[in-house]
Length: 428
View 1 (cartoon, rainbow, N blue to C red):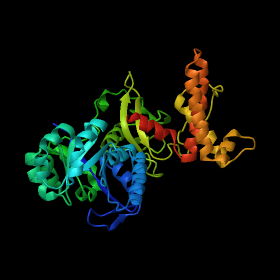
View 2 (view 1 turned 135 degrees about the vertical axis):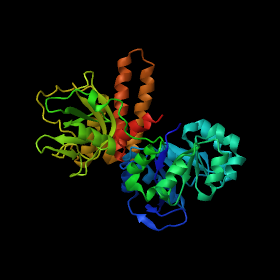
View 3 (view 1 turned 60 degrees about the horizontal axis):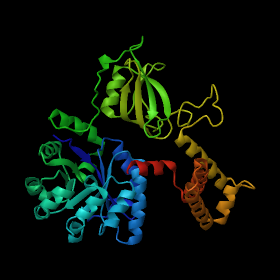
View 4 (view 1 turned 90 degrees about the horizontal axis):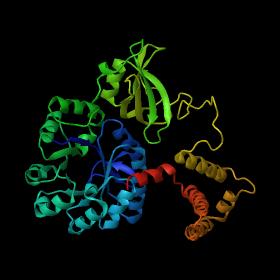
């Protein structure tokens, strides 16, 4: 049995979210905020359709899709404007977990095998508007495509009867009873389109309704019951909260049984305030919500480690983390975490660009411009190659450090963060 998915869809046109393929009525001027809203309210995935009409618009849409992928924490599928394998690569490089081939175009059908073999079957999706597009290409789909999106409501029943692939179906409108009916079909793995968009505020309730009807959906189901946890004298458990991407410790709070249950139900970290003697959802006042990625009990089951997607700052002071008052200050260079070292050096380079310092080599590079930065990168790359022929590994170490520094200058010049680089590496 497969988990069934609720997948909002955003139709992108000229930087806006519009109503549908054939209706360019603007429904939201900020597709990024709309995507974040969907991801924070129970959506399992996100489908983005690029409806651009020119190459320039398409590039702007890809930049927008990249921002959406960076700011949401659910998988994104990119679709639209695909004519060659390079177009699939652009979606995946923008951060999409999957990219869709339009099977109404024979040219897309023709590149299915090549796309699947290069990027992986799990990243390859087919969009069909007629069930015949499935039957004509059944063997190809079964061998090389992970999922099929049915974009025409009239083709759903026939597609469900002939498809051997999981189907995501797009519906313009849908009732709760209809959702249950559709998701009860074994071959249907999810619902997308305006039928989900129009119910975006109710996705968690829809999931509860699905569970009541025996349909498996993604939700927070505890492997350890509250009764198994060891409580303190106030019948509470301390919670250490950590950023799931960077592992930075953000804050410490407490949960009672009601806060634990509310966290599991909403997906938002909910605590019990001992000073106010009431439940509080982190972010209700500030908008800086914490969305649950995992909850883990320690060996004694008397403390919970919560890994979260943190919106904004965790601390009421505006600091990202509540832990910023040094009790014992670490010695210079004592922090050996590569990520924080890279971030610290990148921060210095960013500061040099904003606040130039006389005699700074970094400012010299920025003043000379991109060609000089690229020339230095080429020279440092050559130095690594030359040093690699030397039996002394220390020389290689020095040259790699020089290269990384010049690479970070380039990153600042181009507005690229280490987080983006690490996310890209994690996808490979």
